[in-house]
Image (tube, helix red, strand yellow):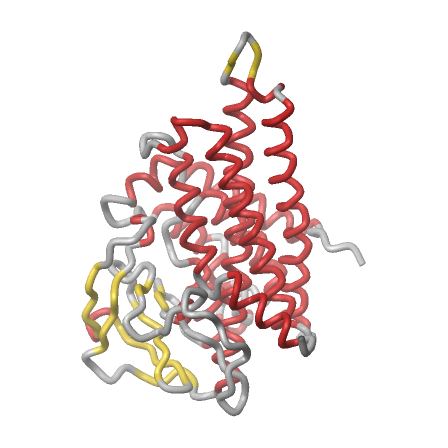
Length: 338
């Protein structure tokens, strides 16, 4: 079976890329480190229906599935979009939460199977408990979808207290969120919560794939321009090997992400395992590509003045979000009784 984008999915992806290239350049991401993100790119994505891909047409959505949204999320990753697109369009929208910029603590929660059993026992470093975790986009979100017992509750911004938290990627605007009102129940179904977690992990894998592509493109461009000994450093075998290894990791991860989207959309029995495989592979691709990019850029790559750090630090954050490598490896192993 060949997993690739058809004409309709490619058209949506191309439209998203064009909008994000124009409205979310590196300068906009850099500005988000010290101020609230500009909503121009977010509003443009809303206008093309990216926030409503998974909503039925009867609710003013596009009536499509995850295989259409994942390519858009990859483009959001490529641009390092400083907005919670995964949380809003992929996690909250299918649960009936629409029309708001949504932050959620599910990315730090351990999903449970029906009956409350843990799907896999993660290491402490792999997945933080939801209580007290830093919630991305907390300082500017309009609503919060928070774990509550075995279910999820929705709180409006005025119903919570947010304590800003300093993190490796300041453009994510993380904060600790404490409800001070009752909110409203969204679901008490553990299976719905587990499905929401899987969608979040899938979306994060797609963003990591986009970030990897961005870092590789940035590094290839730099290697072609930077000269040593009268030659571009990209002509040196050691540099070629670093970049080739990164490209291989990306190309291995890409079909896994597409299959995971297909598995969720079609209700395949191996959907959760496919998501974990995709998240692990996309995280590995981002880690390998990030190391290669940093090494090939040399000293300038370590500076905050260079754009590489915008994508590198976002990848560091997302590799650990929605389950780290150990958690997803454990989940795959458990699914095949290892």
